[in-house]
Structures are given as structure tokens and as C-alpha cells.
Length: 68
Image (cartoon, rainbow, N blue to C red; front, side, top):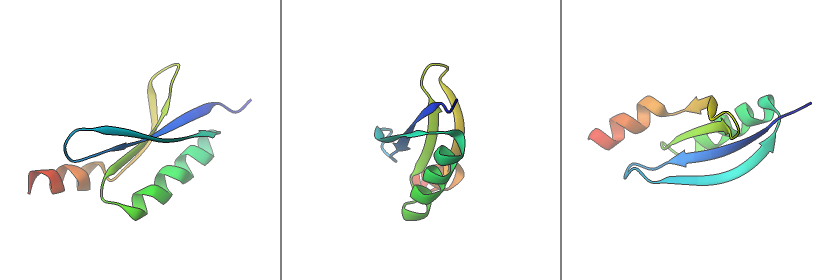
């Protein structure tokens, strides 16, 4: 059984935006990777019941851009 994952974007000002929900771990990882290519903001996939982050991109890049 595939699980649902929510995809979020973390903005430089600290705001968090929800993007979409996907089914399946591989789909979550692919979606996060795709979004990360479009923006320097951090994107991550979260399994809501456990709050486990299963994929993350641009974490270091977003942190560096925010400090500049």
C-alpha cells in the first residue's frame, strides 16, 4: 500500500507553503526533485501521520541565500 505525502516549500522569510499531495514514496521524491530545479527555495515531502520528512532539496542553498 502506497502512503500519501504532502509537499511543502520553505520560503526565505520563514513562511511555509503547501504545494500538493502525492501517493507513494518514489512520487514524493520525484516531485520534490522537480520543484527544486525550478527554485532555490527548500522543498520537502512529509508523511503527515508521522511527521517524517522523506525527501528534501535545496536545504543548504536556501539557507545560504537567506544569509546573503
